[in-house]
Image (cartoon, rainbow, N blue to C red):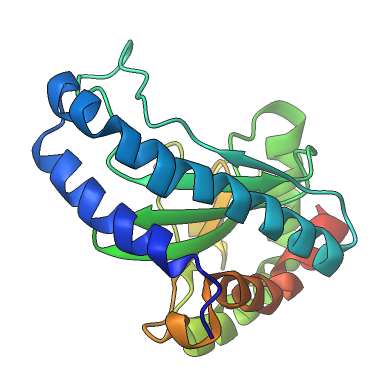
Length: 219
């Protein structure tokens, strides 16, 4: 059932395909009104609606954020000025509470879940969580991979090359221990238009709640 947001997707994916091939100020300025009216403004409404849904699903208060199209190129070798994608997230504002992430890219749409940028005591707590609950986490992941195609994401810092002390190098969850955060992602199903974008993303977020609760309760 259409909820109107398919028009945002139908505008966004061709727009970002063209932007990726013409990532320069003259092209963007000539098409900026289309971006603002057909993509950015609907995205802000979509993010607000999902913030309410995710808050109801989790019982926590989530706030939305739609990322800017302008790239921060100060420390990047890639000086392309614009992001050729639409990214948004929903956060409860606590480092131990996983956030939800949604992306529209030229050839894909996906929903993510995770905790990122851990350091110090938070990173220590994450490693203890993996040591204690890694099997439960990987079992949940295996089920979601079967039902939704969910997989670990490479988003964030590069993993360590070795398992950090005091854990053994042959730890059963060595690869998770090497990470400095945990990110998951799943592509939206091809038939998302049948239910509408809002309902589809809500259903996917609901399916990932067991992992959200495990991390929130135990980290």
